[in-house]
Image (cartoon, rainbow over all chains, first blue to last red; front, side, top):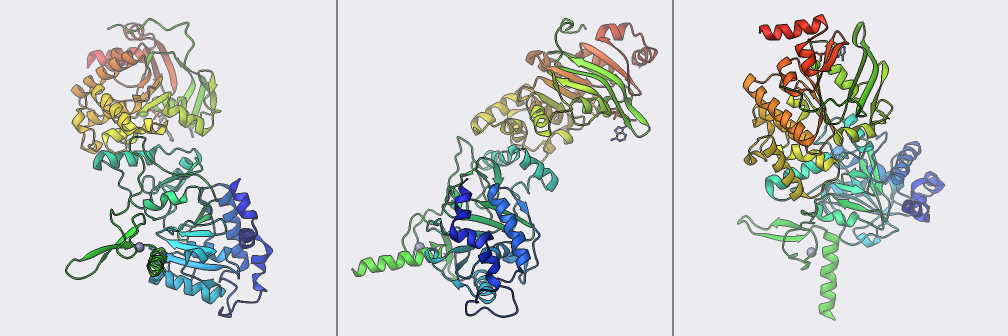
Length: 315
Length: 261
Ligand SMILES: Nc1ncnc2c1ncn2[C@@H]1O[C@H](COP(=O)(O)OP(=O)(O)OP(=O)(O)O)[C@@H](O)[C@H]1O
Ligand SMILES: [Mg+2]
Ligand SMILES: [Zn+2]
């Protein structure tokens, strides 16, 4: 299986389940880590429990694994599931990037980054290319992730059938039987009422042709990036106490109909800052008079493009 | 009013059950019940309230396990089947029409979505063709095409029941279990619904196992009748024979009370 290659690769296995990670206590702390905490905040037993859940999750792509989520010194809405996953896979040599809505400089991203700087002393970056671990809420970076990277998603609601079938026992059964007609009924209803599938975020996907999965509230635009992604994708839901995963190079298909194929939607504009015509854009209100422009939601990608353009112009 | 098909004796049954026993605590709900149904046959189960009719349907359709007995579908042991296989059967070769449309419909999903669900559950992925089949089934059950995107809660009781039938039949099941499908409806609405069930079952060559305590409905629809009382089948046979020449005193009582009414 694909997952085996990643899990065996020196970096990933080192961070997921090897003596290196659990031995991190003894390893000299990178400068900046504060005393009184175990490396990356969680105790080693908790990390091992989470890593076991991660290994199971990788072995059954898209399948939700229950785990004993811990209280974290941050409220649930702040992505404690993602934080626990990140804490369990970080090693001292990792470089962490944290994004929220595509940006590195939002309050949520800053406080999570600061948290890991304090409790693990790891290096952080705003550059996707320089990160070994990317923790995210609401976006997948525009830059294609590599085999030596891991992306950790913060998930508020891991159950894709939640709105259709609130009973957990029943959704478990539907997953076990791969009985996903109900999700298609939901999409049918959208087309019948609106002429198109209205889901713009958290658009359901089939993983490895077997499990229906919630991709977390990323825009549907990002769904195709999950398909056969070279990086390992891990998902943590703190309040709901579930972990799931997509191993590298796994098929991830957005549900659709033959005559209403999935379309990754973006605002039909170019970025006002870098001129990109194929990235996901945010609409920004510029003044009280209702002025607005569209800019890349991935701030790192946008800044790099602007720098490239400036360099080309200078040459 | 004659049964609409020749007696199906000699044909191998689709569904065959023997020695069914089930107790709820002290209440014997099924006592040594045997029943079979062949392709294209309509069998009515009649009997007073509490006689075990619903329990029998639930056991036959694998929703409930009996204490003893066997149920075979085309030679397969229904009771030994895994849940996945049984669910597959329930949405392909079988159908179940509930007495209360609320139990058989998704009330928050449009009429078209209700009809389309079984198609999607078995893999239909072409919106246009799902919609076309939904429209054609709405027409068959006499629901106006303009109602296709309306929610069932805006439908009358009779319409809801017709929608439930359309939703069940869309995947062309071989056998449909119906538990008092006309219960709770006005008499005139009942008559129309029974006509519809009769014409559809003929047209599609459906086998129907229908529970009713309406003798007139049984006469209209059924090739054969089973009379239940206190968990036992006290009499069974061709509809005309049972109703015109009832042998068991309880059946005689049932028939005479209808005549008197
Ligand atoms: N889940 C249950 N638990 C306990 N007793 C039950 C249960 N289901 C049915 N019974 C009992 O078993 C007997 C048969 O019930 P069943 O519902 O099969 O009757 P019925 O012939 O369908 O009646 P009705 O015409 O009123 O629908 C009744 O005495 C009933 O009270
Ligand atoms: Mg009943
Ligand atoms: Zn840009």
